[in-house]
Image (spheres, rainbow, N blue to C red):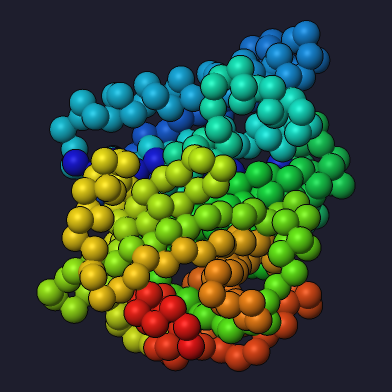
Length: 364
């Protein structure tokens, strides 16, 4: 049985309601059973429990996050009893959406009350898909008429959209679907991203890799749309030519564990299969580590720029350079970087800059 849990999020009037219908139609056709966890904020607010009816905003957010997480547990519990072998749980917003509606102090207070850690909460979802509000790039279509819980102006909706993206930045599989096309094509792009993530027909990864000058890490950490992640990557022994690795990923003592197998299709395109691991499974697989390849430690900065997810890897054995990676929807897609980053050259096809090569040499 394969159960995946994803989040559909986005700014106000981003198209979530229609998107959920499209997901039901297109993903079901691929043989998946689709379960939907309803949006908790709309349920509570229309039922009379709201930030302005509770004692404080923090009181309300504690109610909302607690209910959100309990609903997800129940859906997962139910999914495990079903006879189908492929089940997708779609969360209409996830727990980290709440962060956009709180101050840092309120968010810390709610996490403390629930006994949770932000990284653990964020990375509990397998993928996150953000639909950009119509207030950014499609202002003529922005409306509050179709949701009684929506009260934001165009300016407020755009600012909230930025906060929501920032809340999820750092997740290993975050995709931002913007308004660069008409609405129908926006939803087609969303469905393509979801099906690609699910491996229908194959989980293709298209990425470009760039050698950059050592970045200003203080500047990166000051950005609201950037998150620091610590990674330990260990390569396993294989006999079929595939590249298999296990990875510990997280920050501040909270980690998730992932096994990844990759096979090259072209210079840019690879088939990539990921599997979540428990800590015990991860530790057991470390016994199969390739003795010729050292574990790679790196600090990854996950940055959203121009609605694109950029991952900047800083290695302890370099003080003059780093590597930036960008995942693309197609091989001919244009790439733009913030002006604060100095691009030295593209190294997508340079085997010396692959992590497996770094694990073998640790220096170039």
